[in-house]
Image 1 (spheres, rainbow, N blue to C red):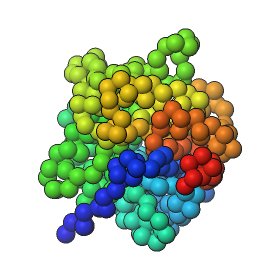
Image 2 (image 1 turned 120 degrees about the horizontal axis):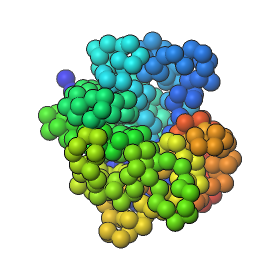
Image 3 (image 1 turned 135 degrees about the vertical axis):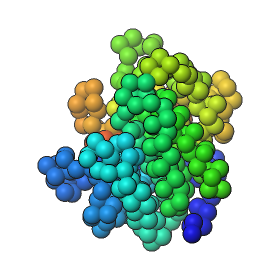
Length: 330
C-alpha cells in the first residue's frame, strides 16, 4: 500500500516566507563521524540499512541546526551509480526506501515543519559517451519511483554536471508521477564552475552551459540531442550547488535573478544556492562564520532556498540560521 500523499506546503512557504534553509554535506559528516578511511571506500547510502542509527543521528543534527528541508541519504542510489561501488541494482530500492523512512521518523519527532527531499544525484555516466539516454532513464526511473512511494515532499535532483542528465531525471519523475498518481515539487540544481577570468563573463556549468542556457536549453553535442531547458521542463526550483564557494554562488544567484526578472518568472520559479565550504578551485575552507557573514549576500541576490555542500557541517546551517534571524526575523 502506498503511503498517504506527502504534506503540501513547500512552494507555498517559499512564496510567503523565504529564505528557507536546506541542509549541509552528507559525506563530510560521515567522514567525521565514522572516519575518512572507512567512508572513503564505501557508499554512504548503504548506511541506511547497515547503520540506520547513525543516519538518523545525521538527520537530527541537520534539523537541530535549523534546516527547513533535509535531503535523504540517497545521493548515489541509482543502479548505475551503485555499480561503481560493486553493489547490485537490487540494493537501490532498499537504500532509497530506508533513506526516506529514517528521515520521516526523525521529522515526525521535530517540533516544527521540516520537508523531506528525496535526493537524486548524478549517475556518474555521460550520456552519449559512457551511457545511452535510455540507460540513464531506466536508472532514474527506478530510484525516483522508490523515493516517491516511500513518501517524499519534494524531489531534489542535484549536482547535475551534464544538463541533459537533469532533463532525464525530470522526465523520469513526470512518468513516475503519472503512474503513481502523486506529484511533488521538482528541485533541480547544476554544478557551476569557478569565476571566469574575465569579470564580465558568464558563469558556466561543468559542460559549459550558462544560466540562460540552463533556463532555455542548449544542444548537447555528445548526446546529439537538445537539452530542453528548465523553463520548458517546468521545474519549481532551480539553482547551483557544489564546486564553487559563497562569493561565486552569490554571483551565479544574481545571474538567475536577472534572468527571472527579465522573463517575469518571480513567484513562478524559485532559486536555490548551495555552495561548497571546501572550495574546489582554491582548496580553501569557508568556515561557518565565513558563511554567516556572507549569508546576507545570498539573500540579497535572490536565493530563496539556501544550504551548503561539500565540506560543510550542521554548524554551517546553525550559523546561517542565526544570521537569518538577525536579517529576516525568523
